[in-house]
Image (tube, rainbow, N blue to C red; front, side, top):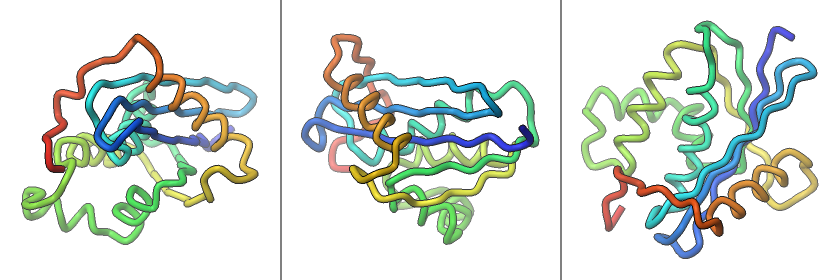
Length: 152
């Protein structure tokens, strides 16, 4: 039970359009699902927001975390170190700077590793996150994505 496993996915109906995220957190035998829908957002924002929302649930620092996601955008930005260079330049010219800054603050509190999984394939938990994300995007309970900037 020393490692937290998180699966995440994001969805957007149109890009931009209504969107949602889903995440499933596994800590030992405990499983927790979360999701939320947003008006006028993008798929990439929802992919990243899923990770942020899951990490915000943690009540202690220093957790060893593996995040499984089908978002090459999220995996590559963190695992290839691009994010850390973007932060040094104040995210100049980068899309979703508000979310990347929020993610980085959470990342610094834990030991986070990302693993890419093929979306819409045979991964049970990625498929569940997709169900959560699309249901949230289609729900009547949509929040405003206040950080979304048209053109991003």
